[in-house]
Image 1 (cartoon, one colour):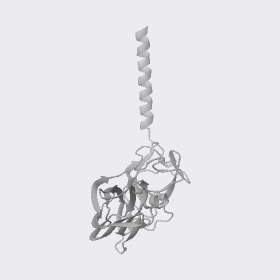
Image 2: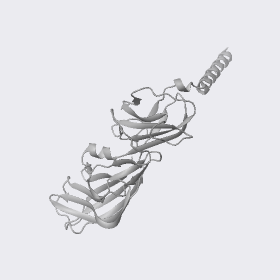
Image 3: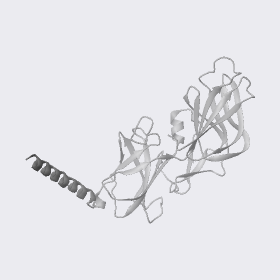
Image 4: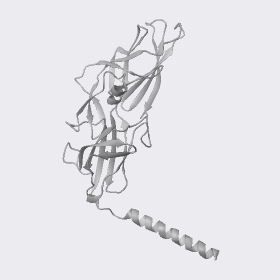
Length: 288
């Protein structure tokens, strides 16, 4: 009797498994199948968290046929805003599939008007000392190719395409007293304007742009960060300035700001403002 029950149980499991497999393989009616999306921020890797996208954040979405280039209009989806709500992302209208395969392109922050696919103007903020200014400067991009109609969500895994400079202030041996936990940190002589290629996720420095000053955001007591357009500062010139207790510490250098890379710099505060030391702490590609 026990053997018979086991055999019946195994048969039922096999039937259920076969049914599930058959259901998964059943073709969907593309034009009546709504699109769903699973969006991840570079700092998340999984789902929406406090350190990633927040409720109300919007991304821009395009979807074009795999056999056609991405255009401003005429795609299956054209700059549709998706809004973060809890763990889901929704459009203002239901987006439906069509027959064929598609490439999906998404970006953040959302722009109501996209003037160009290959040369979309975008500038980082010169005042990144606030959370709003800093986040508005961090252009994110996601691309998923060769996707066809399915009940499964389209995965949009975002990455950074700008460069990030993180500066850690370190007390030098000849610095007297306690080092203040607050300072003003500036990055000089970088061009804040860029153009974005939405079909490739590449940011290019605006060739006619002028170098300016960006104020960095304080992350913790002695750590500051700024988002920089990828570019090369070819000539030695003032690059990093720290103003602490009314004293300015200035460092001159050339520098290569690489796309999607966080550059780590130790800025050693000396007792003499003219004797600044810098230690390059390394690079993090695809920082979180």
